[in-house]
Length: 359
Image (tube, rainbow, N blue to C red; front, side):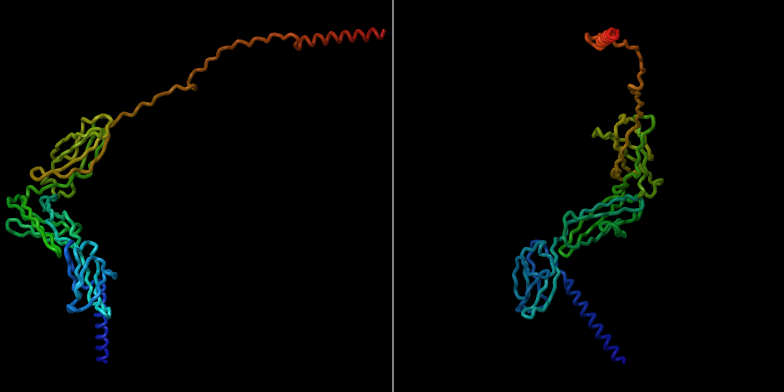
């Protein structure tokens, strides 16, 4: 019974190995990288030099400029269209012997590196990027030195090209040296920068900037804001602020520098004109000014226009004057009155004739 179980286990294990090998073969047994514009040779497994093979890319015939030498495929002056999954099949049985995922790219150039402390005095962060794409996976190595000692570097969870470093001490006169190396399958390149503690301090911009008109003051605006939430100790390391404002009708800014205050009243605003307002922050002693805050807009208070009373016909007094009676029409000759007199006269004559005949 034990032998049967053992045999079954061996069969299952062999099946798993076969399935794994098939899936690995479908995904591309290996990856080969090449530089754009170069000539590239692919080898079909470990076949002998006199072996005859057929090459396919992504399941179709290879159309790129090429040359075939036994089990080798030579691609000429490769470009991005040469990317793909290449498979080789041995003739004449057509059995697949190898698969290669082919990736075209470039070696990295020197990365651009900047370092800044927006959480002073806790620490600083460094970020980097490449000015030119490599088209293939590229990793970065970061080394930070201070006073001939390597400092712990913590990679940022949200930004892959950023790291955080804690200050080993404050007010140090020793410079910091940061070296960032870009590495991929085609090469590597490094950038090193040095800076002093006082030069890297740069707060984030002020937050929640609000500008409001002041009632009954046509030339004033009240501006309030909060210190940046990333600044950890505003009491021990206070900030000063730089306010700029201008009406939309003008291009020239007006400036006010403020110490240890989070509000200011603009007293020289143009009446009825919309203003744009921004602020920057800086440590009282060291570092540089932050970037500008998000712009806010406000218009000084204006007096409500008084209602205008309009005169209508309904509001006008009605004055009545007696009008003269229309003149009586002049009687017309042969009119209705004359007709009545003739008829009356005829009646009298007829009555007289009747009386005479009775006599």
